[in-house]
Image 1: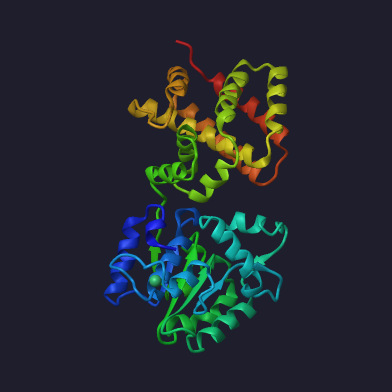
Image 2 (image 1 turned 90 degrees about the horizontal axis):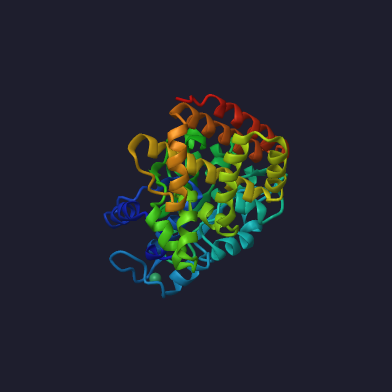
Length: 369
Ligand SMILES: [Zn+2]
């Protein structure tokens, strides 16, 4: 992967390039941030830049044999450790699937990785056997030239077995880089964390996500909605683009109105139609709702709702005058609870019917002047 094909993240890329050029790139680095912010693409572009036979001042050449092998994730000195299932599992067995998913879209995350295996109920881990493998591989000579790179994707999955790696991370064999990637560095074994230099990878800017989506052929208005919903996370944006956004916003406003009227039959009908969405769409609905309430809050506090279309802004302006800040917060909490329930496979019908009643109770506090 070339740096120029990474979405956004210019500052972190510059930092890494500079450290490499000055010979100050730490031998163990931990890239911490959601997968959809681009941690793995950054690790891949950095690896390619290290391996490249004719690197330019700020990117790999993209055409030498090292670049071509790295692009395809088949460079023999580039090692991957990834979460797998089975108590004796080693990453090598899972590598073909890992290559496939990365080459399809490099901004995938753990949820995508699990669903690629249809193995949601499995226990995913990085095993003791895999840790021993890492030590063995890195103690061998490099196959092609100088460098060896070990990428550990989702380093949170290194449970106490990870302690087997402490020595090699602390004193790696010559010309070896460890690039650990974690969604949340706090969940990585503290003994490992303390041996790495941590680079925090921030969420992507909206403009970068929007441009990338339009570049993938998404219509501009759809891209704008997905950008608003994805919260800087391109893995989320890719998931969102697989489900149409169009009707969700209207459905959310209908929920607000239906619950306000408090008619049980209407609410039951609404819940039935909500239930016809698949789980991903239901979660997207909640995200849309949270996004809308957030904009409503901004409208109330600073008079602006930059991420609402004119049409939705009109509805928001009406609501702004009837809901106070506490009520808006309560609705956000309610939506968060619903999202939490859906994540845990609660019964969507019961959940949303109950939420409709709670919403009615929140409205009841409306003061009529
Ligand atoms: Zn090259």
